[in-house]
Image 1: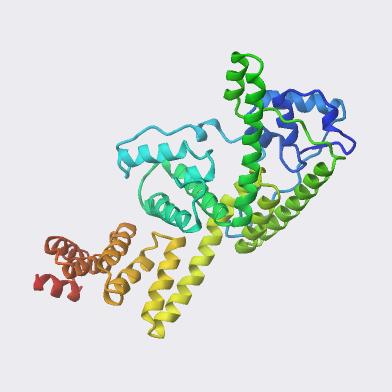
Image 2: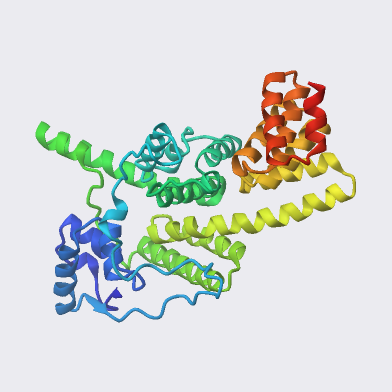
Amino acid sequence: MPRLAPDCDPTALDLSPEEGFLLSRIDGHTSQALLSQLTGLPEKQVDECLRLWTREGVVLVSVAGPPVKEPSNGAAVPPPPSRPEPAHEDEAPAIDPELDISTEQQKEILAFASRLERPYHEILSVPGDADTRAIKRAYFGLSKEFHPDRYFRREIGPFQPMIERVFRKIVEAYELLSDPTVRAEIERSLGADTADTAEAADTAEEATPAAAGQARRARKPRRRPLSPFSRLGRLMAQRKAKAKGFFESAMAAVAEERWLEATGSLRLAIAFDPTNAIYRERFGEVQPRAHAVRFEALMKEADNAFSFKDRSDALRIYEEALHFRPYDPLANHIAAKLAWLVADDLRKAKEYAMRACEADPEKAEYHRTLGQIYQAAGLKANARRELKLAVRLDPKDLEAKTALKSL
C-alpha cells in the first residue's frame, strides 16, 4: 500500500505527465496492483516508479491490512483486489448464436459496454442538462433492458459478468446524476478538465499548427500540482480528508450489511472528491444492494395497502417497487392485475403481465392473466395462445379453461 511521505512536496519533483498522474493516485489505501488498473499504465512501469520513489523517500510502502470481513451469507462488497484481474475478463466475448439471447442482443450489450467510461449523461443517453424526470425515464428504460434479472435462468455464458458490470454502471450514473449536490461536483470537476484542455489548445495554436493539433488530441493535459501550502491546496486536502472519512464509514457499514447507510456515506465521499474512481466504483457495487433493501420495504408497504383494500395506492407502491427490481415476476403480476382491474389501463397491464411471463415462463397463473388482459383488449388470437399455454402448464386451472372456452 504505497503512500506519500509526510514531508514530500510533489510540486518540487520533476515528473512527466504519466508520473504526475500516477503520483496523484497514491493515497495510502490503493494497492500497487490497483494503481496500474486505475492509471492504465503497464504494471512494470508502475513498479519501476514506485521503486525509484521509495529509494528517494518520496513514497512509503506498507503491507495492506486485512480485507473487510465478509458476513456468513457472502453478501459484503469485497475490498479492492490485491492483484490485477485476469486479462481475459476485460476482453469482449465473441458473438455466440448458441446462447439463450439473440445475436442482436449480444451486439447491443457489447456496444453498451464499450461506452461505460463515457460521462454519465452519455451512458444514460440524455442531454447534459437533463432534469431528474428525464434521467429517471432513461434509467428505467435501460434497467428493463439490462437488469440481470431479465436473464435469469438463461445460459448467456461470458455475457453474464458483462451484464452485471453494465447494470452497475447504469445504476451509478442514475443515482449520482439524480443527486443535485453530487452531480454539481462531478460537473464542476469535468468543467475544470475542459477548461484546461481549451487553454492548452489556445496556447499551442499560438506556437505552430502541428503543436495545436497535438494539444487538441491530448485527452488530459498536464496540470501544475497545487502547492499544499496554498489556500486552494489546503481546501482540496481538507475535502479529500473528509471524503476518505466518509468512505471508511461506508466500508464499515458494508461489513455489517447496512446498505442504505453505506450508499449515503459513499454519496458524500463522492461529493467531496468526485474524481476518485474507487469511490464511484464502490458506489456502483453497493447501490444495487441498497435497491434490493428498498424493494423489499416497498413490497411490504404495498402488501399492507392491498390488505386494507386501498388498491390504487397499492398499484402506485408496486410500480415504485418495480423501479428498483423491474423483472420481479410476482410484483409485475400483481401490478398487471391492478392496472387492469383497478386503473383500467390495459396497455400498462399488458406490459407488466408480459414481463412477469418473461421472468417466470413456467408459471401458469401469469400466462392466464396475460391471456385475460388480451381478451379484455379484444386481441382474441393472443388471448387464446396465452390461455392454452396456461392450461398446458396447469391442467387444473379452471379459470383459464373457462376464459378459453368463452373465446
